Image (cartoon, rainbow over all chains, first blue to last red; front, side):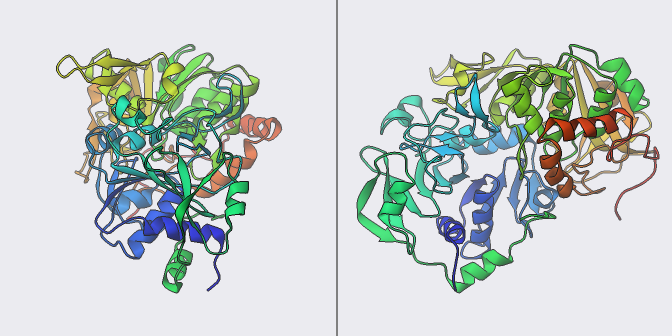
Length: 252
Length: 286
């Protein structure tokens, strides 16, 4: 079956999740991938959304993070202070699944402003739950479309701390989890180099070249010595993904 | 003690120019009708607090009622941007808007501190971000027991909090369920509090996961069926996702927004208009 780059990204992201893990899920791309994983190889995946819906199994994808479909199918619904204070903060979440408008070579994320804070070129939504998700989960997976304006040398604003500016920053700040461990894009997979924590290319999706990835990356991207190629989506992965519908939306 | 009054009277009596106002509801039970009444009564210089400004604050900001926004995520959920908010921040239209932003956990804990009668709350927070350089109500403290560095956020005590709920009893006790967000904390943190409800019943039957706001925590309750639309009221009506998509077009430019605003000011908004509802009617889905 033919597939789009977008579908490859979602499938690759879904494959990152293992059955039985507890995942704190962001809306849109992360939510799509997490729900795909739950329908495929990880039926026991526990999804937690910041709206307080714990162990939710939505039959359709939510459009917003607080859709009724998330509450209807949740094991339990807790308040927003509770989901952050009792469930995220102490480190009960295995994986945090995030996206962003900008990411830099150390996987710091920006969802606040493009340009200067006081006189922004573009004002973005802001932080939401992401900063604490990155601080509190055991590891972070980022899902983002690979575009030059998004993959920048330095983010204009650190909304969500990734690896700061090197390997020791998270520990110095007392951040518990290991931070972003993989960035899944529509072109390939990036991972922090073990020594420097700088993102390097570790896998290409089928049909994508290193030159293409470099052209869409705003820093001189290192390529792993063991550069792999992502297995294309299987027929089952694709048909399951295509059968997933978003709640009552006219457009998606 | 809560009295059951009309929405018009509740807003007239309890929401004043210059107040810090919180309309809470996390995607669910957003008090749209109350927000529209604030627009109609032309309140000015408000400081608006809300974790997710959503369409309702985009509308109030576009109407020129606010001078400041305290928030943690300002987008149109699942759709994109809030263009009135953007226009106010970047171009000062129709009036300049100051912002104070937090993370979700920070905002939630500001209400928790406010509800607890404490001056601040402690959380692990998100060290290393740029937010602390721009937000004076978040700082770092040292734990007196372990020496760990932690984040402190100042309590948020709104002058008035407004929430929407499924139902109230005749004494003014209010019950809500589904995604309950930060409404309990926002009400308990406030100096004054109002609730709009879908219906009034003789007794509040138990409902799984429900919270109850006792009548002595509220100043007024107004019956406004559909008062959360185009957001949703769990068990009553669904989120009108099409309206959220349409807002993307309406809010994009000042002219289409102004035309929308004229309709609301005339007391004829498409959704959540108190004059359209029949107070007390049961609209609950079977």
